[in-house]
Length: 291
Image 1 (cartoon, rainbow, N blue to C red):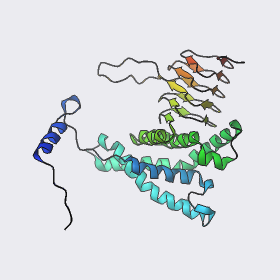
Image 2 (cartoon, rainbow, N blue to C red):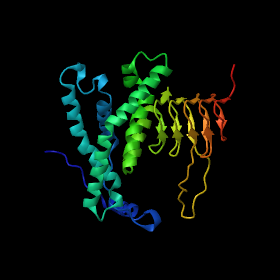
Image 3 (cartoon, helix red, strand yellow):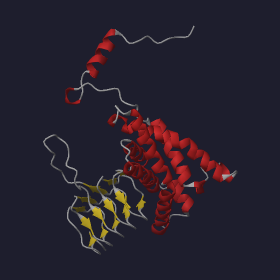
Image 4 (tube, rainbow, N blue to C red):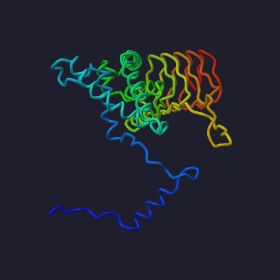
């Protein structure tokens, strides 16, 4: 006879009631649309990388078979899962109009899916930036398969597109997944230009309102963060630019910290390792100790 686990006891039910009776602003929590679990996000990210980087043979292991058919098959399986995850993230905003909410989620998903070729083109520029910036890179396949910086940037570029299409929560879930895998924390709201190269990568933080231009290279431990900010009387943070602007062709070496929404690092500057900057730097400036 199969063993059956006993149901919750009275003391546990009482404790559950007490937990559910405590909510923000005195309101009990509502039953939410279940958000994607980490175990569900990882395969979704794998499928995104499969279609964005078919060169490394994820879709057709060993390079055998019809690659076009294989990519189309992955896309066909990805779309409904992405749509469900988008819906879960925005449903809390439109519970009284569920049909409208589902229609909105479908539009967000469609807009993101149709943008995948554009995202792939940007990522191939990021791959080339890695090849140009790292003499240890043996070829694009190594960069795509092995470089944590490219992994984090690829997930960011998809998450950023989802956010711009109107998605909520899911973009952050995606970048938090990339952070857990790489140690690289890029907020999906950041703006990052083309040919972006993260070398090594562990410990990098890029805040929500950071603006990064084209052909920028940053190393491990770099923080592009915010200074302390004042909150409104309702406890929310003001929606202002809190993080720095990094112009084109800037190099930021390991463990540098650059803070503040008014801080601009001018085009072509080089920021030395272990520097702490809360001020703007003119174009072409070298900051730090140099031999």
